[in-house]
Amino acid sequence: MFRASAETLLEVARDPRHLGADIGFLSVLHTWGQNLLAHPHVHCVVPAGGLSPHRTHWIHPRYPFFLPVHVLSRVFRGKFVAGLKLRFQQHQLTFAGSLKPLENENAFRSFLRPLFRQEWVVYAKPPFGGPHHVLGYLARYTHRVAITNHRLVAFEHDQVTFRWKDYAHGNKKRTMPLDSQEFLRRFLLHVLPRGFVRIRSFGFLATRHRARLVPLCQRLLAHYPTAHTPATLTSSPTQPTCFRCPKCSTPLLIVERFSVIPAWQLSTRSAYLDSS
Image (tube, rainbow, N blue to C red; front, side):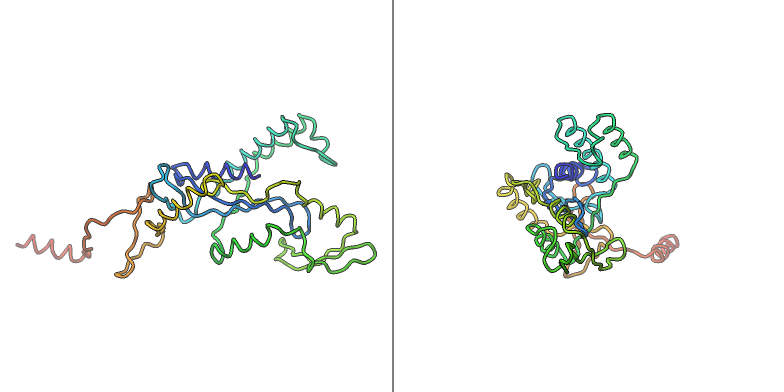
C-alpha cells in the first residue's frame, strides 16, 4: 500500500497534463477500524503543489482540486494489483484460513481478475481546519494502539465490552461485547512486525532530499506565495490579483491595463463616428 500509493501520487503529479511537478508528502499507516477488525489504509498528507522539473519555481495546482481522483484511482488500482502479482511470484504472500485455496496460481489469478472490472476509490479532500488540524489528528494515531483505555467499558464473564462508533449508520455510538479470545485476536491483528516503519516520507520530503529541497521550497513559496484559484479571481487596490500561466502556474506580469468599455458606449461612439 505504501509503495503503490506513493508511486501513484508521484507519477500523476509529475505528468504535465495534471500538475507537472515533483511533489513531497507524508504517509501514515492505520490498520484498524472502530470495531477492531482489520482495515488497513494509508493517510497521505500532501502540500498543494510541487517543484518545477528544473527546480526554478513552485507550481500551484491549476484546478480547484489537487489531482484528478479518477486518474489516481485507476493508476493506484493497476499498481496495487501488479504488486500483488509480483509478491505472489516471489512467494511473499501468506494465505491462511479461508484464503488457503488462493495458494493455487489459477485460483489467485481468478481472484484478481474481477478487480479490474470495479472502480476503485481514492478519497481526497482539503484539510478541515487547516494543515495544523490534519497533522494534529494524525499525530494522535502514530504511536497509539488499536484501542484506548477510555473505550473499554467492562470485563465480565470472560467478555470484553467496548465502545465503538458505527460510521455506516450516521456515526452512531454503540457498545460491542466480545469473548476475551476474540478481543485478543482482533487486538493482535494490529501489532506490526518489529522494525516496521509506520510513518514514511516521499518526494522532496524524503529523508535523503529533505535537507536540500525543503529550504528551496520555502524560498520559492516566499517569492510566489499566492495560489491560482480559477473560480474566484478578484482584485482590489490593496490586494492585487495574482494571475498565473494555465500551463506551468508561473505568475504573469501585468504589462498594461485596458479600460472595459460597456457595449452601449461602443454603439454610441460608433454612431458618432458614422455621423461625422
